[in-house]
Amino acid sequence: MTVGAVVDRPISTGDRIGRALLALCAVATLGAFANGVVIMTEVSDDRVLTEAWRTFAYLVFAGLWVLLAAGPRRQPGVWELVLLQKTAITVFAVAALDLPDAPTTFVVDLSLVVATTAAYVLCRGWESWRPAAVSAR
Image 1 (cartoon, rainbow, N blue to C red):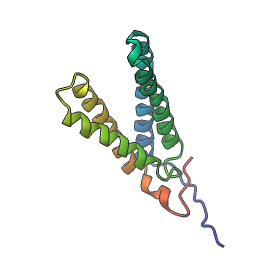
Image 2: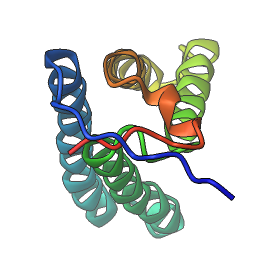
Image 3: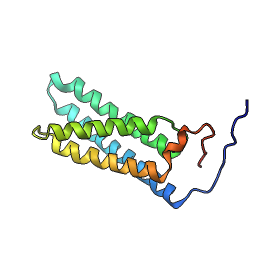
């Protein structure tokens, strides 16, 4: 069985911009995590578990964006899962715009969808599915 060679090449300007967008998404999500910790201390007992679940999920998403930034063409499926979840919550927020958090959720998650999609294009994220995925530093 022949395994395709991994090709190292200089990181393009587009790749750097895409990785910076992913890093920005990760940092913003860490900010949401910090805010979530504050919210967890302020909600009623019947909401603590739900807020904890949401708050700790921010760490997962921050980690996913870090993984994508570190190896954008070595993460098959991660791009698509992140975009699927963020797009789904954005669509749900539009459908529920009359709810208190929906307008903010819409703006934040739409921004994350746009930034992640731009990074996907700039970093050529689809190449992660190639058998001999291109390695980037």
